[in-house]
Image (tube, rainbow, N blue to C red):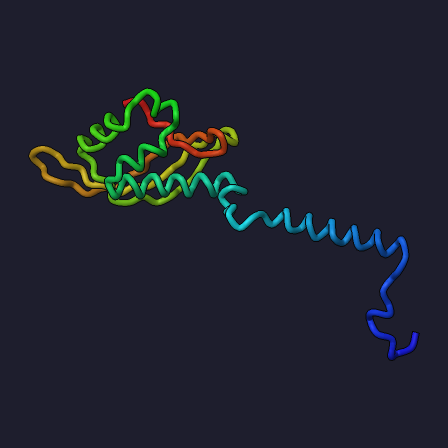
Length: 156
């Protein structure tokens, strides 16, 4: 080939070229499938990222006193046993006002059951002592059911 030969002139032709084109198309499609759709976040691909997002969202609702929203993060079994009104009534009677939470650690016994460790800040209303601001660790059991994380409340 001369130096003046263009790229187009160097292309392969014949049955081998068709096979190469099919392989290239298959590789492009496979790569596109690996990247996922724009509606899927990293949380869907990484269960622990999804867990952390759910835990933080649940706590933001508790801190904002949006108990009806926090209720939706509880396991379906808990919600079938305790009504939303019972949960809200109990949350409002709690002498603790949640102020903040910080993710500390997670220990997963299985891929669908994790113990989440957090450091929470809160105010306790104490009779005769007023309000006391404090912080402390909290552990919560979170269960993945049908690819969604839910908090399993302890039995008080």
